[in-house]
Amino acid sequence: MLATLTRPVSLTSSLLLLRVPLIHVTNLRHFHYQRTSARRFTAMSQPTATPGDSPKDHVAGDWFSVPELRLRDHRFFVPLDYSADPKASSTISVFAREVVSVGKEELPLPYLLFLQGGPGFESPRPTEASGWVRKACEEYRVILLDQRGTGLSTPLTPSSMLQLKSDVKLADFLQHFRADNIVNDAEFIRVRLVPDAGRWTILGQSYGGFCAVTYLSFAPQGLNKVLLTGGIPPIGNGCTADIVYRACFEQIIRQNEKYYKRYPQDTEIVREVVNFLSESKGGGVPLPSGGILTPKGLQTLGLSGLGSSSGFERLHYMFERVWDPVLVPGAPKQISYYFLDAFEKWSSFDTNPLYALMHESIYCQGAPSRWSGHTVRAKDEGRFDAVQAAKEGRPIYFTGEMIFPWMFDEIHALRKFKGAANMLAEKEDWPPLYDITALNNNKVPVAAAVYYEDMYVNFKLVMETASQIAGIRLWITNEYMHSGLRDSGTQVFDHLMGMLDGKRPLF
Image (cartoon, rainbow, N blue to C red; front, side):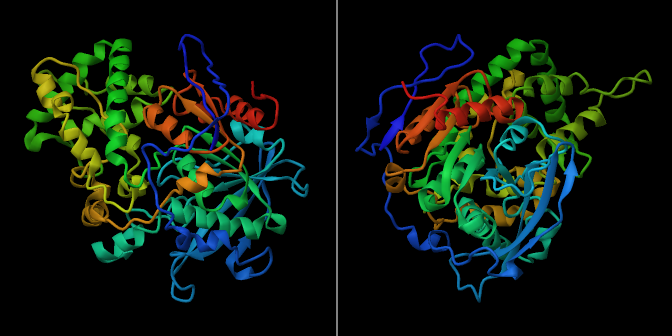
């Protein structure tokens, strides 16, 4: 495999770009993989349609405008299960939005597909030409895909999933909403949307990058270039969730330490809140939606608060309004509605429950997760036991990107899906998501932004996977956090493109 790898020497500079001689890797070291997955991706390797073949499976809308952009909606009707007999498989709708700069609607532009982070979150909705979208539209026709189950792509919401009347039926339905079928959908769309079924470039952010590596594994013939931002997955066979969570817990502790160093006053405030919750009736206080906020639930604020560029500030500003004012002398102390409402809005489980249901499965190939995050946390409960930490006067550590089984008891929007979640956690026959042999022989140009202090995608694990993707070029930086594409989209997009178009040549 050919790979351009980089290793940071110092983190004092704002931008680190590693360039070392190309190396050839023949030893797969940590990961071993059997090429048993070809049958799962027949639809991708052998497209069965060309543009205009079947008007029933693609409907295009009219152009409309936002400032400096023109947009057009597309709906595609795809199989729920690509491995099933087409006549027997159910059909779902997948939505994609085409975006171009004003005046370029009819120009023969190359296509760029954006794969959103998640799992379980829809693509962005442009309100103007800004960020990476503006930059990309200078040269590309951008396709914003709502991955199946999100946005307008047969959205799986707390209300829509109730149509599946049993835990078994829901779990069976949900198993088709992973990266393998997201890539199948992308190929279904490409051969119908891109003229002459041509190749397109893809940009994968976070989980979208995981999907892009699946794409490289099983359908590289559809790809022109690949850009990854904070999204290089572990690719070992079995379930890699334990490895991921063990590595990520250490980074989470470092992020907690940074937070309390920036806002030392919050150390006591958070302890006070934990004591209040633990001493409340039932071990917590009611949430506006009908759920309950417990000390463990409070710790999950780290999922959004510790890993993005403005997360520390947002978390601090939440806690500065955690208590209601005392309007009447002697009135009991209570947590404010403002804080409880903000807590629920941060999680998004009421609008995007797919994240909680499918999160651990994104690490599974032929093995179950068995609530990996919960298991790994239990082995290190001394540092993450909020009640004990409060009693001992220690800082309360927030947790990160983990889903725990008790969430399906405490979060109202998830309660009815507890049975299906447990079934998915025990599922053993998850199909393959990656093909290491194919990645070793990759011919598609790939550039990746790797965030050295990324809380969600561990640097060490990223480097192990990158060593298996032939020809990949890495831009390793501590200037950005996981949200780099959102925070400085123009710069990040331009830098990655420059690595592939010759503006930033190899040294």
